[in-house]
Length: 246
Ligand code: UDP
Image 1: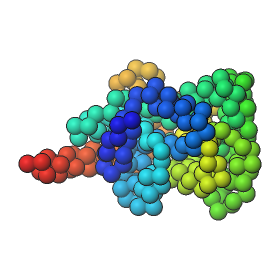
Image 2: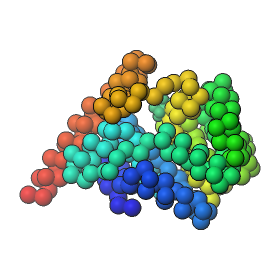
Image 3: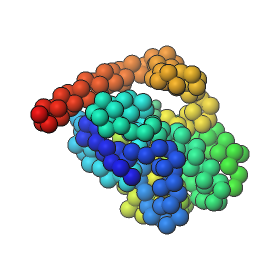
Image 4: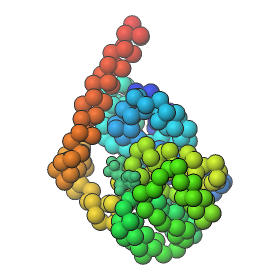
């Protein structure tokens, strides 16, 4: 798959279908895969924090989670075909796990949310094996959590711990689960459990999902201030690249 760089993060430029096909192939070959679905917030975090940037570099696949990244890539003249969100990949991968009777481990979110998520996943995808589910409120230095996930022998692990905790956790887990698909999915369990709702279709199409989330959760405003900073940084990179090509 073609690679595209946006502000120092290297994205895989594939449609959701292409990404899924690649993931299915790697799963069938028991080739371990660490997936990062990066939104502008993650890109900006990687720019500021070299430890986090090093984690993102270890990913086998980086997809554009959010229209901001797709627009940023277009501004730089390196278009990405579409956004490939963590939530959408999660849903499709659960479908694949169902079809192939794979073992899935879900880790993250608050305890009532993970309980609802686990129940919903079992009911919706009865053929997958739920190898385990636990909440995301544990300390990363507590290696018993890693050991518990690894000993459940999952084929897929979805970690909804927020960034950078989920990436830190999954890179630690990787050493013990070299053949599994590992993916951070942010707030996706809250959506799956029905605690948080995704924006209505028309708002997603109008690229207003960020506004919907802000209205529902005004405390996100501080975090959202990275969006204008992201656009500013992309413009700066575009200017620098144009200068370099003169
Ligand atoms: N979370 C967790 N453990 C923590 C901190 C957060 O499990 O130590 C969960 C939180 O409950 C939420 C998710 O991680 O379900 C992060 O959601 P957020 O909205 O930050 O994710 P985004 O989709 O914006 O990356």
